[in-house]
Image 1 (cartoon, rainbow, N blue to C red):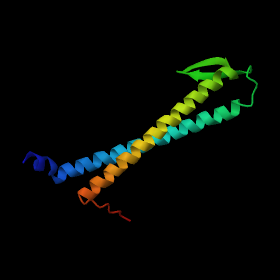
Image 2: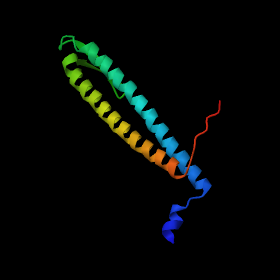
Image 3: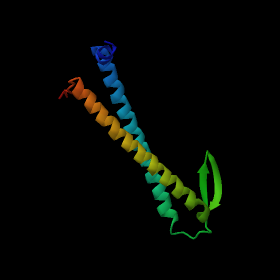
Image 4: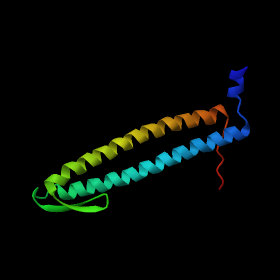
Length: 118
């Protein structure tokens, strides 16, 4: 009896779960957008610094502190950061796709149809 009781959700519970899942998807999509922007910024700086002499002076902002470094010191750190951001972004995209499939299955299971208003 308890298994059928746990499967039967009220309309309010279905609505709450639907809204929670929808919000999770929106939050993940927003974070992916932020990370894409950050990755693009890193890439632009890497592209700008790459052709320069490695001994050339450059400045890097770290935790609100402007540090004087050389291009050869900064480029590897930038590339590492860029790769890390891309990796996190790929993980979030995978997570988004998984949650999107769960969301679609939830909608189908509870016969939820989205009606757009024009």
